[in-house]
Length: 162
Image (cartoon, rainbow, N blue to C red; front, top):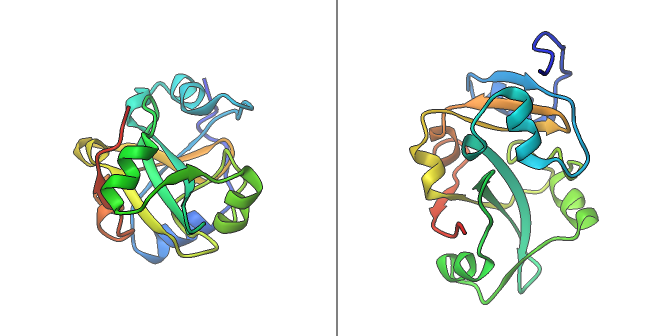
């Protein structure tokens, strides 16, 4: 079980949440390379469906965007492209994602990104009572109300889960 009392330094994501007046809970865990949401959900005792991953992708014009997806689902890039009105969408290479977001892959948060990007969220995420999402560093998730995503963050709901 992850240490619940571990102090986590402030990140651009938590600074953004505080600036917006958004209440959040801290959920540190022991980061495992390539462990993903399955590992964090297991360590924290959460359903992986409620652990939301932040994926940096780009359209055919190389314009970056963020898609927020259930931890236990994949993104259909074809369906996402169709939903947002572009020809194609593909994941960014890790170094490109890091340049756009300002975060290391595995610690990417949709909050407080270096570059302002369009944000999309799988519609089912908004139906959950509470979610865990990356707080801006590896091994650190924050618990928030999903309405934060469609409200202050301005994410647009889409249906592209596989």
